[in-house]
Each structure stands twice: as structure tokens, then as C-alpha cells.
Length: 313
Image (tube, rainbow, N blue to C red):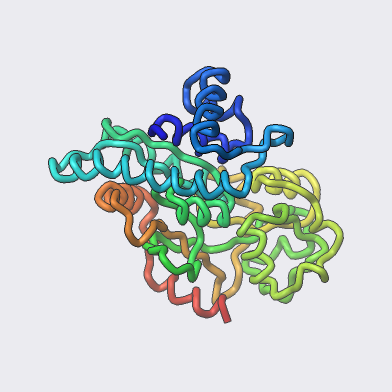
């Protein structure tokens, strides 16, 4: 079994498609398929069920792929250890980030980070929280940027900042004349939410102290974008909740829709998450520094972090 063959089977397992795996590995599909079949013949087992769409990894195939993934990680670490010994900041940095952070946080720091470290290849994936956690635990990501605490063994959480939740309200809403809003004043049947699977949806539900099954029908609107919800509020009715970063570059027309909660205001903790045994720790520390240098100072106020305990009660 060669490293190339291991890369191919890991890719097929990840993408559930020979065509997509070949594209990812920068080879033709016949080349990849031939090498996978050759490996199966050498091992005397079938790694993938090609009759299924998408392609399914067999039970023994899962065992082989997991071992191949570990071997590839070990192989990559050889070069990373050499670079580390030489004091070089280079190599690939694979980052996962949740959708409710990506469009607002990345523009603040990513280009500066890449300019600062020109030999680092940055690969960013926008993923749900559970996907990021799973990929961190299987070495498919080096770091994740998501909402914590996670309470997961083997993962290290490095808090970056704390952002408030704000109400984004239609100007014709009965409460629009208020400067601040109390939780109990909100009518949940008028609230627009992200579709299930987004951790931000769960955070909003937690703030409003309601069970999903008790929410009004309008909360079943399926949207994966905060920007979509924001535009619905502007042009139609009701309200939604937004994270603070999403409001920082709003113009005066958009800002008129924002209402803050009365104290204690709800807040979420955003952290850089990595595996405890992460060999790219030095590179991730550089990423952490770049983020902290470019997010607004008010978001780094430690007093905000103390509200997390209140929200979890």
C-alpha cells in the first residue's frame, strides 16, 4: 500500500464519489479507480460498494480507511516536524468555521494572515459545528472556529472573543419604538430562525427559553443564511436575532432595525478549537494572534465571558 493509494481511498471515503475524489486529488478518474482497484486486489477485500449512489465504504473498508488516514497524518508530521525544528512557518493549515461567523469574521483577518505567512497554504471550510468537531477528531481539520463551550474530551478551546445577540426588528413592529427589549416581550410566532442544524438556531432557542416543539409555524422557515433572514425582516415583518459581528458594518438604514436586550444581555463565546496533541500548535498560535489583533476590542472584554455561565443555567 502506497501513500498515494491511501490518499485516494481516504478521498473516496470523504467525498463518497470516485469522480469528486479524483478532482480533489488532481488526477483523472480512471487513474484513481485503477489504483483503488489494485489496492483492493492486493488486500483481497472490497473497500467500497460501487453499486450504491453515493459510493459506500464497506465495513472492512472503514477500518482500512481509518488506518490510512492515521498513516497519512503521521507522514505529514515528518515534514512538519522538520519545518518546526527549522523555525519555518509553512505548510497547509486546514480550518473549519461555522456559517454564522464566516462572512463577518474572515474578512477581518484572513488576508492579513496570508500576507504575513506567504508559505502557509490556508484551506477553509464552512461547516456546521458537529461537522467541525468530527473532522477535528479525525485529523481532517487542524483548527475550528466555532461557539463554545463544547465539553469534548481531547479538544482544546481557546476563547477569542464574546459577541452579544441583538434583535433585528421590522420598523413596523409594535416594539420598534423601544430602545431595549426584554425576553418576555418577544412573540416567538413572529421570529425568523435558521434551519435546524445551525448551532446559532439552538443558541437563539436557549435565549428565549422555549422548546422547539412549542414554537410557532413561522419558525419552520428553512433558511441557511442570516442575511436572508435580515432581508425578510427589512421588507416584511417580525424580527430575528443576529450575532454582534453581523451588525458592525451596517449602514444607518440597516442600523435602525437593531434593538438591544436589557441586561443581562445574552452573549456567545467564540473560540479557536484544536486537538490536544496538535503538532501545528505554533502555526495555530499565529492564527490566534492575527484574529485577536483584528477583532474589535469591545468583543474581547472578559466581563462578557462571565455571562456565559448565566446563559447555561
